[in-house]
Amino acid sequence: MAKKLNMRKRYELLTRGLGWEPTYQPKEKVFPQESYEGIKIVDWDKWEDPFRLTAEAYWKYQAEKDKKLYAIIDSFAQNNGHLNLTNASYINALKIFIQGVSPLEYGAHRGFANLARQFSGEGAQIACQMQSIDELRHVQTQIHTLSHYNKHFTGLHDPFHMHDRVWYLSVPKSYFDDARSAGPFEFMTSISFAFEYILTNLLFVPFMSGAAHNGDMATVTFGFSAQSDESRHMTLGLEIIKFIVEQHEDNLEIVQGWIDKHFWRAYRVLGLVSAMQDYMLPDSPMSWKEAWDIYFVDNCGALFKDLGRYGLRMPKFHEQATEESEHLSHQIYTVLYQFSHAAAFQTEVPSKEKMDWLSEKYPNTFDKYYRPRWEMYAQMEKEGKRYFNAGLPQVCQTCQVPMCFTDISKGNPMELSYRVSEFNGDKFHTCSDGCKSIFDHEPEKYAHAWIPPHQIFQGNCGGAEMPDVLKYYHFNEDDSGEYKGSADDNSWKAAHHNSNDDNDIKESA
Ligand code: FE
Ligand code: ZN
Image 1 (cartoon, rainbow, N blue to C red):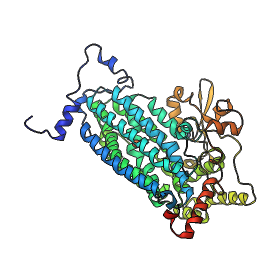
Image 2: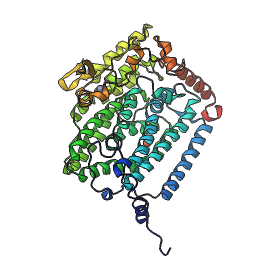
Image 3: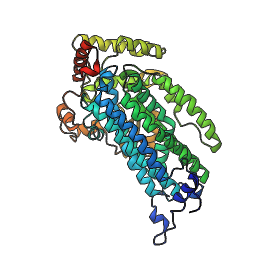
Image 4: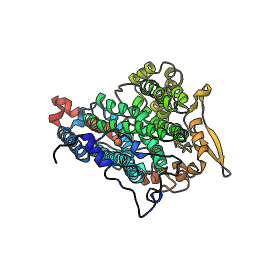
């Protein structure tokens, strides 16, 4: 060969040159999922891949990143890096991460692999294939990083088993299953655009800068290692939306409907993150409300201004999400506090310093609505009556979050919000206008959702008694309940008591 081709040319050969027109079977039979959603693709060749990367270059970059990551994980383990955290209560955030988020990475891996098969355009096939491999790498690096913590702390031992069964994990699981059981274009709008493009910062900033603020260098490192992949994924998310809308005018309304739906679904999943961010990090980099204002109100506001020229508008019910931002974390953490005897993490009443921080970050709501409740719980605990809710909550048929939200947009922050729909003679309850409108649009899909409290009542979760259910979840005895006096709390205090004596954490361990 006379001349070396540049990257763009090589990428074109990979994506355009390798495709062919099938002749043994009609194209619709080879790609059976491509048309039933109603999306019309006129010319796949108009697909401009956002991250032209040949297979050769891809493997080289990824291998370099992995080498660095594993070197840091090794030294973290050898130096007992976990002893340098702010406090062992921080680990509760990691438990939520590996139980709730890492299995989604695996779901993304499976989902994008399917898309690589279902799209007939070669550019899209290759992009989805690379993202599929990225996601597999993400879940693996997360498991490897957190395996060190699993040697020292509770709740980290069986996250994938838990993800498919445990009540609070059905919130992220059902969102991803919703996307994966939809067609390929809806999956992509959901995961690549609504989740990875619009809301990803709201997930990764609290977890990754949360890790940095709490001395968790291992998690920071896998966060950084995933970040360059993430920026490719975000670009893909934006490009797919523009591509679909530009292909045919009929596509706009369908895509807008998916943006509305998956924005709200993904936002409800992030409710768990808001609680983790505001309450479970001993040292929190910023509040949920601050993050929402920056990453949603400002950044997404600007994004949708740009997308206006394609005819797209802000997702439906975004105003309600913004109105809720001063209440969300408080309402969700209250549920986690009440039900942590049935969770694989521990909770506690926020400390005095934490409450003052919350007052400062939420001047309009915390002292008025939420501080009195925490003070009451603290008093109960003092009297030896630490509050655990003995019932099973009603959960939303769509998002599966326990019904803890209030009617803030109707001016009733103290009144529980719930909506009712009827379908086939049965009543279904949802937590909000957003979830009700999603249910009403596809009732046949959500009517048969796997709702954890219903499943427990029907005897499908190991038995009728709490210990049966916890066994079915694969929880260990020390995983749940109150943080103070928990196994994690005790071992942390023991380790630090010893290490303070000789003033060197690393040598004593
Ligand atoms: Fe990922
Ligand atoms: Zn809901």
